[in-house]
Image 1 (cartoon, rainbow, N blue to C red):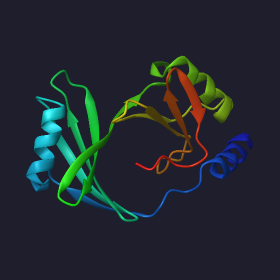
Image 2 (cartoon, rainbow, N blue to C red; image 1 turned 180 degrees about the vertical axis):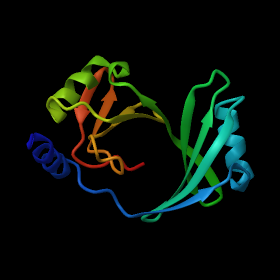
Image 3 (cartoon, helix red, strand yellow; image 1 turned 90 degrees about the vertical axis):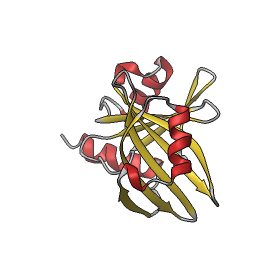
Image 4 (spheres, rainbow, N blue to C red; image 1 turned 135 degrees about the horizontal axis):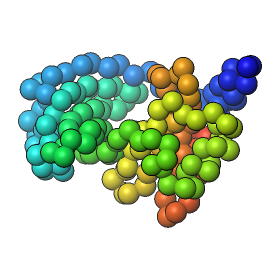
Amino acid sequence: MFALPVLAALLQIALPQGPNTIITPLSPAELPPALTAQVMKASPGLTITGAERKQREDRVYFDVAGQRPGGAEIEFDVQQIDDRFDIVEIQRDLAFDEMPGPVRALTATALGQVRPERIIESVQKDGIAIFELFAPGQPAEPSAEIRFAGGEAKLLTERWPH
């Protein structure tokens, strides 16, 4: 009964609160044309369904949500650097059983018997995958993040920068 509050407290110690982020919702038409072109090049046939501009510390990002021709939902995290746009992550929601075995095993270690309420897979531009795990009842920030590269999973103690 009281395991969830104790677990949540332990996870907050392991992964500190993220930096303050200013979020501005945008329509797809409000996106900079160069950004839209880059996202469309990365995912031909994408239908952009939503967007946000995020300012975090001294960085500016655009989250561009869309649907691929086959119906799969996807989100691009694009960092603006001066007048350039760099896709830094491609995200999608996953079910627990869709995660690689080593990530599932580490999730069980990190969260005990509690399964995450939501899992986001964030594939970085270098191919490394970050799995963001959201504890039940805590939808705003991931409670834990796991880095997966070269077949190995590692629980992060600091938030991934993107």
